Image (cartoon, rainbow, N blue to C red; front, side, top):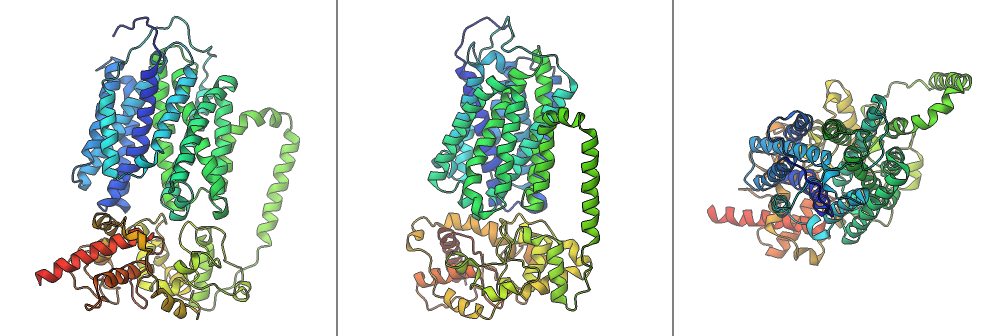
Length: 631
């Protein structure tokens, strides 16, 4: 294609950057995953689908620089937009596992084609002035739109429709490339080391971002404090836009190394703050700032700032950055969040070396003697500390051995054993434990953070059969769980001992608390936003695994259940007195969904808000009515 010398405002380039971010954030990273949850694709099947998306993204990011067909950049951009829009609309179809894998593969491929082609030619799309500002504006607008409450809270189907139409409409944008006689920015001589360091920096940042996003999205307590309310979303939108524009200015003044280091400090701090429930507000402020800062650099570096002089070289570098830094970093981050439920502080500190080493190396190079002595002293201190560790004696009982398993497996990292007085904890988890009993713990296992529920009264709220099934496959048994599998503990006695310990966690006061739960009712206004459609979606995510005739947990563990869970699609329906009126029956169903049924394998879903509990109750009541008519 011939590139004519034209003057352009670069609005098409700004729009394309914004639309690409909207597609990735709202559809690929959010709506599509919600669609998978709605149809019950979880556990291993979910990993298969996400692996297909990563394979498509990595393969096409690296393939674009080598494609000999469709050499016109403008045509490639339009093909990428068309493919993105098509995949979004395809997700509206009834999805099987095979179709989900195919759509995921196409999502990754279309994003790989669009992102690499776009940034490799962004220099010719952005006009003549204010190039970095325009990239910052496009990035900021993309994030701002994604946090618009009406869009963010829409159903996944609505989000897919909006994003799909937006991508298809963007094909009609007047995209023109201009020829530059001089480079937009002065380049330095490229070196392999400098590019590898930038690549490692982007990988670490995307890793942190993906892990933090997954943890927040799948932890109700964190989600409620970050982007559940309208005020949170509007605040995030403004922070993203402001940080993106500030990132463009920072890139212009200080360069990419400074911006990436600053983004790491901010984003790494946010990940560490997520470890403490009391720091959620500050983490929710730092997270969008750090994300927007590095996101601007992720577009600006391969398109404008990389020390290259040709579009072909920019395309190759962009391919590697998005394949390794973007897709691999995202996969690693989500994997860390799924398996650990948090970002380990050690990982943050090790990743910091990627950003700080260039600044610290001149200091280290001239202090070899001091560094050697410091390393020797640290190793000696570590060895002394290990040698002074007390030798654990063999626990006398299964409960005591289980407590040691609880400690050794790091369960305290995600679970507390402390009901906070005068808070929602009391309703969800049980009565407040006396300080005298807490002081008797050796060592104390109160914990200071929750990626999962509090376990103070878990022995009265979860049966041993349910706990065993949950340890083997948490995501299947608890629809929103990010807990990794601990099935390996049951290769020996450790699994049974851990269950014995957890079953021992109940206080005498819990029976009085169970009596009080029977007087709980959902908030009256929650009925207004509850629907059977929502109830069916929630049922598939949280209940179907046990209460569908062919539910995975029901079939896998049916011999372990004291009583086979009721088939809530056809009946029979237990624990529901037939004489109650419709309103009383809905309240009773909501109570069962929230608190479970004592002395059975039925758990509660304590974290679910009232409107979701009522939605589930409406859907179950509808099935019960239909089942009664057919009998």
